Length: 108
Image (cartoon, one colour):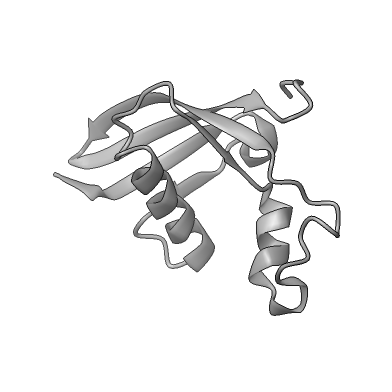
């Protein structure tokens, strides 16, 4: 079992239904899973809230044309997800992230 080998499931909000995997060939998905593992100490911090951009905002940042302009284009660093659960399934770490809202105070 390796805590660096993880699957991150998102429930609610702009990432609803998205599963990020550190083994994914898609660089953005693998990076998102690695980021969640890093900032939540591999999901050990159940209840910790992590804040970030929507998938569209992340796409704008990844596109060199818009690098550094995400907020100017209307993408806000304000979507919040909470570590809801951490488990091991078939030897792989699984972290479940639940949407808790954005900086407007509204849960979606």
